Length: 523
Ligand code: NAD
Image 1 (cartoon, rainbow, N blue to C red):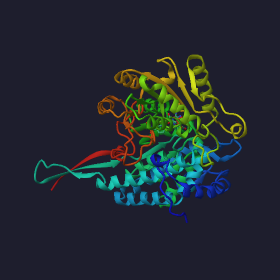
Image 2 (image 1 turned 90 degrees about the vertical axis):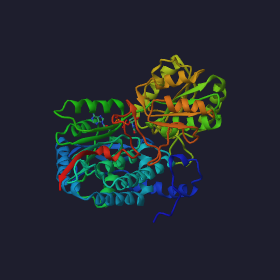
Image 3 (image 1 turned 180 degrees about the vertical axis):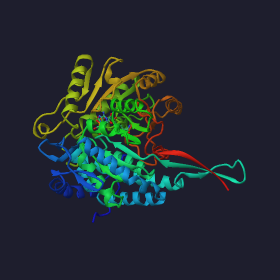
Image 4 (image 1 turned 120 degrees about the horizontal axis):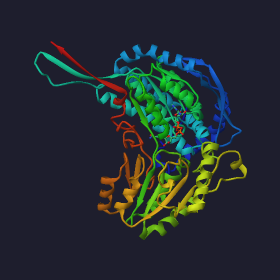
């Protein structure tokens, strides 16, 4: 039985969690011994399925630690998974919404009962710090409960409309689509998978879920939790594998909708392929970000340097909301940069099993290579104010570790100011005029999050009125652009960061998985 421990969220990560750490000290070795390295088949109609190419995923912390063996589902296996979800659909979709809510609440309870085990799996799988890993599972639990609350607060999205005649009654009802493909990224493998799956299921759809090829372990643990919570066999099916399996699933003719979270390039590809069909199904795509922070002459520089550092380097910069460019007013630029460099060079980079490690590895060789290419470009056209090296020696030789990088003096039109790198690399730009800085910050294809540090009401208003992003923060030391939480900050990607103009974590998420139907009945 897990002792009652304080809840870890992204904004209280700096609190004293010594009791949680003591629990993890004991649990991490047990999880490594018992959960890692096993064969984890796919799950189709409640049965394990090994039809596909077997592959082994290893931990980014240490390549010698296998996370497990998984199966890149064959096209036949994808067919069977879609058919299983189709067979489960009539029963699941016709259940009263309150029954679906009850089942999802049981799934949340189930995940809560395994919260620390799943968090440890996530730590090994993604290389997350302890607190980021526990925070993520806590978020997943809150997400399910919040979406259940929304479903209930809206009476299952079935409401009476006005009457044209006294004898005629009309209702507006939101109804499910059918089988949803759920395709998830590697960086929040638990929270985002659970969010997309619970949105689809609450709406009355059934699911074929493909986690990131790096995240089959947490993927299987989550699906097991849903099944153990009593969801009918076939309501949630798991197929592992990479982009090819994702494409086979997304293209499947019997798929009624796709929920995707991942990169802009893949999201846009999924949309283009959907547009080529005889009729389009909903694609709920949440994509990348290039998230600016602004530090004005009226900022609290302690809060600003702490918040920018945390947003840029938490989870090794691999958050869609990571702050990857900071605009600093000329008057405070030197002071701010000195504080930021101090805080960044004090960060411990290493094996995140250690409680004091803030920056774990990056996800894989490709990410480390991308960092190296970006660093070469910085050396040619700008300079590093901190970090920028691939780390070597000891544990660093076993995984993929880089020194969090602060980059100054790059030309204004450099790609690193504009494109998502998804790594711990922050560019610094100076400004004299806030309006021009916000215009520059907006001048990217993305629009996910943005943050400002100012004690001036007018500057704050200007930012809130003109920043082109779905999630805005001001003066947060816990994160300039990061740290959204279910039911508190809605998380909507504007521009190239999303497609539906409605986000996760908020009241409009679940209805996206349903379609409107009007019922007019003469009495
Ligand atoms: P990715 O786009 O490489 O992969 C995401 C998923 O898509 C994986 O499961 C992958 O196997 C699958 N996939 C790849 N090619 C496919 C194809 N052609 N058809 C169908 N599926 C395909 O992303 P990633 O590297 O796993 O995750 C990082 C990205 O996700 C970043 O861009 C990040 O900003 C974004 N992200 C966005 C949010 C958000 O809420 N907006 C949240 C987290 C991550």
